[in-house]
Image (cartoon, rainbow, N blue to C red):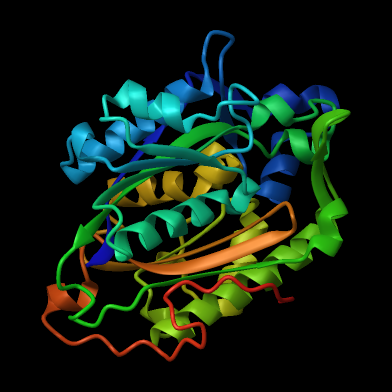
Length: 344
């Protein structure tokens, strides 16, 4: 069996917040766009809950995949801003979707959380412990944003995105390697954090920028090497949508042309764990991501943590094209997924 992403969905709140909302902080639309790339973001209304978005995104992903809710074996939700301290979102999402009491768990990995959740899902499918896993990334960053801090208030938005991971027979035998890998640097935890006695995002922007660019570029090179492919073999590169300058800096480090890179910050802002699946959904809607594509993903978040992966979108790219994939590079751990701590 081989884990393949077979569907994607996204959901947004009703409230749109434009850059003029922040004029009271002494910043202009031009200033915000130049520094961040963000033109608007969505935020939960007073009567909206994050579980509503997570459920809607999950339902859209299942529909895109052609999967019925009762086929789902597990639901895993990546979030830092669940509606309750406990329980997390996953059990309620599973119930609302009409699943048959699957395993359900939340993952708190900040902006890297979606990749950790995806890795968990793919490992379960690869191991034969699940046939269908719904992976949701959902965050209401407005809940932990200091509206008086112009360096962070202009960045964040609320959203949910989801993908379906299913077992596909024969794709691995056709030679379509996939790999996800992660790293961390806990000694830099103070650069990006949210404290209990100050429940808002605090960030050393300049230092985070430099670290994020190097870490994400390094990790995507690592996973491409593990898969025996080059970065220019990727059909689409989806970096965590943290800041347009970061996304483009990563692309420059990798030598990736604009048509290969997903950048949707202008529409949604930084939506943390939701940003990668939201960008994937937009790319598919625009026709930039078609069945058989090889998808590269990379993320960076609080911890500091980072990760990257190369995965097959709706089937193996080379199996679809009728040619052989290169054999994966040897992995010293003996597995598909690396999980090592290192510095970029």
